[in-house]
Length: 232
Image (cartoon, rainbow, N blue to C red; front, side):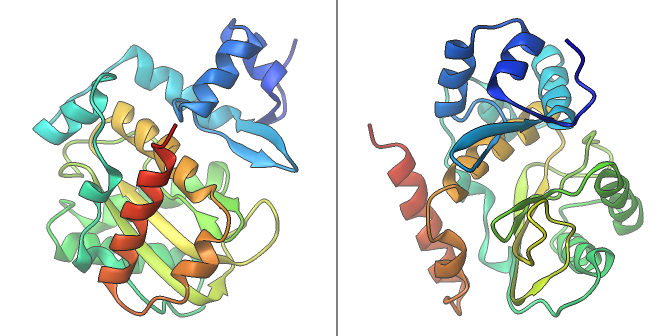
């Protein structure tokens, strides 16, 4: 079977990974593999699956938090990757590059990256492969190949736009929440993306966050969302 299309079904992923559909579905439910639900069906991006496979085959730990996240047996709350000063409200309706530049400059101001120029260009290169706007008003930009020389440990920067941004979303709708994932490890960035996607898949998340006016409200809400996904 050939996989010329970037969007893959559950059956295609099972064949691609040489696993049973039941095993892949279990991984989906455990937020262990990057995916999204479209019209009540699970869909996967081949580029993200390839990144995920690379991460499984090659672990590059850089600091204590990264190593903990990389350990299958350890659960690290995503709330540990958020900080009050890393949430930007009311991003103006600008180009994708301008939005990413604002978030990168915030990362630089908080000493999360070494140099904003190379990080911004790598984010743009990733977007040129395929937009990281996954639909439903959400985008998850990230470096395709994390580099410890550019990024200092795992953090998530949140950009909030009530007006909406044209981010090249698959559903052609404006993006309201941009989660810039910064990590120095491929394993960590894939695992964080999978967990974050699972949390954001809950109904009403975007609409609720757009009503908030403070970082404290956003952080508390994410703690609540994450707790809900851990319930049996």
